[in-house]
Every structure is written in structure tokens, then in C-alpha cells.
Amino acid sequence: MIEIKKKVNDKNIIKRIEIFLIVLFIILIGWDLYLAVTLPDNNTISRVIQNNVDSGKYILTYFWGATCANVFFPLKRKPKINPTIGTIVMYVIALLIWRSNPEAHLEPIVATNLYHYGLVMVFGFVIGFIFWRQGSSE
Image (cartoon, rainbow, N blue to C red):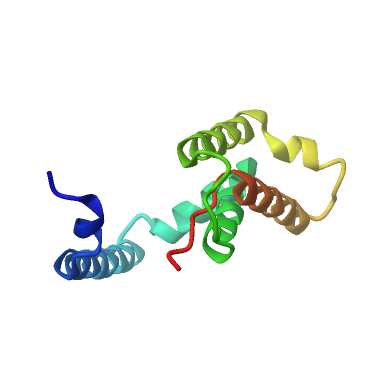
């Protein structure tokens, strides 16, 4: 059986993953440009994301907050919460946000729509900081 650590640190595999990601992003950018110039109008990937964000569900904003906590504040020790459990908690909370229509609950409290996104992003950051942090490789 091949050790996973050796496979993960193999320079050929890392190079292949880098090439795959670069090609994937070039394809996505090309696809987005193609969709921008063809009918129906406003059918780009960016517009679909914006429409989902503007729907009042705040799921993407929540995940951006959690991703910021995960990427910018890595753990320097072993996590206290199992990463699988943390991921499950993240997705369960996202499902609850999606089902509960948070826009209706935030509207009476905060009048400015920008603050709604800020609150949900901070909430996602806190949940990501507690449940979904990666360890640093140092």
C-alpha cells in the first residue's frame, strides 16, 4: 500500500494538480465570456451567482465568511473538533439558513441590505472559525 503522505507530496502529482486547476480556470473564464456574448442576456456564471446571492438566502455570503476563517486563520495544533464533524455542522447550518429565509428575520432588525450580508458573513466566519479550520503545514 502506497503511503498517502508520499503521494500528496509527490512533485509530479502537485504539478498535475496545478496544471489541471489552471486549465479548469481558463475553461471557466472562456465559458463565462461565451455566455456573456450569447443569448439570453445576463446568462453568465457571475450573474447566476449574483442572482443566488440577491435571493435573500445568504448561503454564499455565509460560506465566504467560513472560508475566510479557514484560509486566513489556520490552526497551529491538532483541531479539537473532528474535521468531518465540523464540515457536517457547517453544511447543516447552511441548510438551516437556506430553509429559514433569513431575509425576513433580518429586515426588522437592520434596515440596510449591506448590513444583512455583513452579519451573515461574520456569522459564517465565527462558525468556520469554531468548526471548520484547517491545520497549517508548518
